[in-house]
Amino acid sequence: MWTKPAFYCCGVLFLLASNTAIAQSCEFGSIHLQPLSGQSGYDVLADGNYALTMSYRLGVQISGEDCQTAIRLRLKDGGQALQGQGNGVLEFDWHGSSGYAQTDSWIATLSTQQPMTTIALRFRTKQWLSAGPYAGQLEATMDDDALVYNAAALPETRDIQVNVLPIAQIQFYGMTQQHYDFDMGVLTSNKQISGAPRLWVQSNTGYTIRVASGHHGRLRHQSMNEKWDIFYQMLLDNNFLDITNPVAEVAYDSLSTGHIIPIGFVIGDTAHKPGGIYSDSLQISVEPDLAIKP
Image (tube, rainbow, N blue to C red):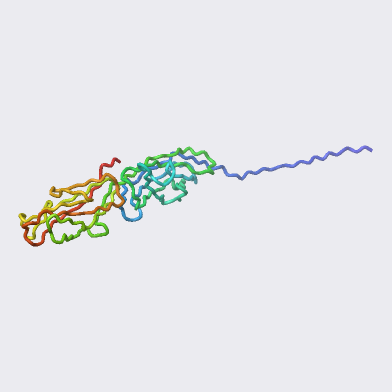
């Protein structure tokens, strides 16, 4: 008896259902870096924590919803200091309303909702530097290693320069007062006096010390009668100054973090001068060399 062979066909049907959302399309255009503050002078004698703050507006063009990217702002040559002549460097700290510091950079996340932020370079006080320009180049770049889209934004660079101002100050060494009464003792002919207070000068450039005598190099009797005047000479740093002129000057070519300068006097002829009190006033000032090219 013949039986009809039976054929069994087994099949597996794979049903694929996709629940994947369409990837968000994000496009990025130009990066913008614009200065907000015009001040660019740094005072080495300034008080407080920061002598200068330079603010910048950082932004990027963003197309698309819920898009974001990280922007890195740094000096193109690295570090956190502007370069001056020689080996001088002017250091700064990063500061921003949003973002964070990373090594020598500032990282800011910009998004569709916040495509712009403010970043500042804050230059700390008490940096003793030679007067002159200190410069660098800021660079803003896209800094998102996990981008699933192609970023079209090119790096944005901007030159930055800070001028360290020529500064000089003078005072009596070891003293805080600006006025000092010096007693020359008993006046005798050709008496040499070396016990006057010394001067102390700080300057970040060359400087000139100026001295003006109220009676043009004469000690005047208390009667204020000019015929009893006693001539005297002044020594500054062991060099004679001609204080008979309206202003006597001595120039120094180099900067100084603290130059101590002795003062001396030589009394002229006191013969046939009446007894009493003789006096003169000296005004001593310092001026930095302002011939610094920015």
